[in-house]
Length: 586
Image (cartoon, rainbow, N blue to C red; front, side, top):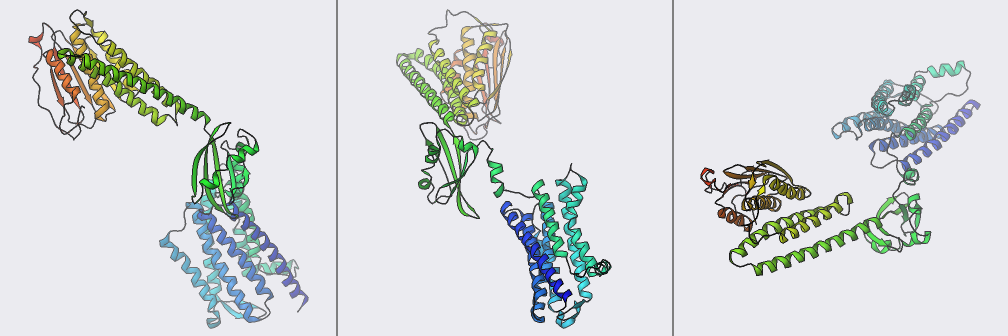
């Protein structure tokens, strides 16, 4: 063996082994730092793995002791080059589009590398890839150049897709950096072209360099290092595992990582700042092994002498085995809010019991027409107060734990609604004969107070009022106020509406009340206590009511005024218009 050949073999082995070590290190770091569900990262790791095997087979080919083994390693060498070209296209496409290659085109893209490898595999029969081949040297045939042309085309497609991704990733940064990274793959391709066209041989002879061999995979390794440097500086991939400390150590949520035996391996600053000593923080997680047995996720509350906590644990699988990711939330503040809500609910329940006792007592005292009058008044006043309070309690229940800015005010409004009902009960008059007349402005104010309570439930009520200058008879004032309240209550209870329009018109001859909502309507109207009481109240005043359930609920009330009955509109009840299948009153 000549000294030059020994030097060439030693140089090939030494340089390629160095490149392999660097590539394996890059592959390991890349595998640890990237997510498994990133298609571009998976394609990049496949390409880098193929490059490593390419260099391994290159070394084996160089030191093979006989021609048969040398041919086997050459087959592995070219199998890896075919794998590199197809994985580079997959990598570029995934980088640009964020998805793997489409299934319908994947077969065509893989077919050409398979055809290329078949040319090499069958070369002993057709001599078109290697026109001459023996233990000491070889020369290329036409299929070799066809193979290289296809390989360059694949790399060109991959570079095109990579360039699209880099244009977006490096927008606003130096154009030189963008071009350097996106064209880094061109360097080994150019050197490969110079090698197969013998230009590199001529240059080495001119420079009097005694050793010449294909350095394409070695330069490819340095291009890979340049690309990985850009990746970790410009977030070209989704990096997670090794970045855990940098990402989680400064977040406000307490985080701990436990091994499969629930021993703490990592905690961030927020966890270390939890109330109590280090032993207290460890004891906080003592119940985890029992609670998470057989479950991949578990959450529970834990109370210590210092505070109350909500603990969430998820089992995860990593390179080092099963681990448990634990987050801890201090919920002491929410517990205090919950206690306030419960106390307010108990207060409301106590008021409800008082109201129910009052209603029961008043029912016992009511007899004859007085009984009906009081019952009707109580139904209108208490019905509205209770419905409003229930709606507000529902708001408090929904927002109480999550949004105190909505939950606590809703409780206050519910208490106000109930207190308003109690005040209304005390104000129920026994007779209206000697009561003074009431202005239309006072009636409007009374209806607006009822609407103000209702708005906190989410129902939007619009009032249109005409005739504030008139003085109303006490019975007419009461009838309009109670009827408005009953219509609002029915809308809350049954309509499922978000908007209600109320129109009150006072004239010298009559008063008119119109109510229209955007609720679900009903196929037929079922008169409950509310509507029956309303009709009875109107009948006493020679008034009329018309109800419609088409496209929501509509009510038109007309009441003649004293001395103006002759000029009042027609007062007979019109037929009902059916729609839907829901009762309009209960």
